[in-house]
Length: 216
Image (cartoon, helix red, strand yellow):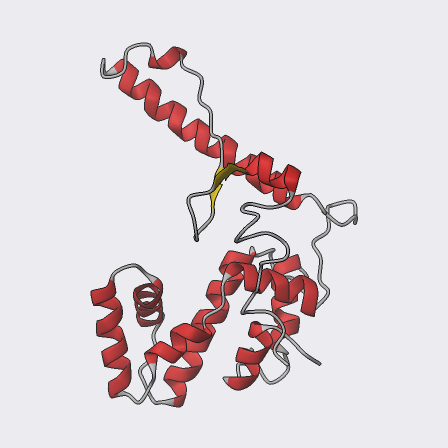
């Protein structure tokens, strides 16, 4: 069966959970919260998968494996500090590990979500057993409310310090904008959802080519 990048990397790197647990079944169990596992979001699942990749390769090349090392080196490999990333890549090379290839095999949050929903046909359910098809809007609204609360607290503090007179009376608004990586197009999330594209020229339905989709 064809699968996305998650399946391809798992097979290529021989990633396993245990002798009795299939890694894909484990991912589903962690995502939906079954088999006594608490629910885990796709971001954390992607991070777990990538760290599992590091552990597997470190063990295969007799590189010392500790939680602290895995965490710090994973953050360096995925972070924005080119110097730190280069230092880790050079150190990996001394143990016979190609750090650049490791980074190429890391999966993103969106890739993990597609793997769960498209390849494994998994879905989240609400407490009444119905599929939560509107989780995206719920998450956006939750994040917006949390952000507005934190900004309001900071603005109120600044107002009380006399640095922002009238701040306590201000209304906090958090419009979300989506920008095209290829041009200067910027559009509000609400508008993009209504018209179903961000940038018609570069991110329209007929222009999108996903390099992480099915491998044939």
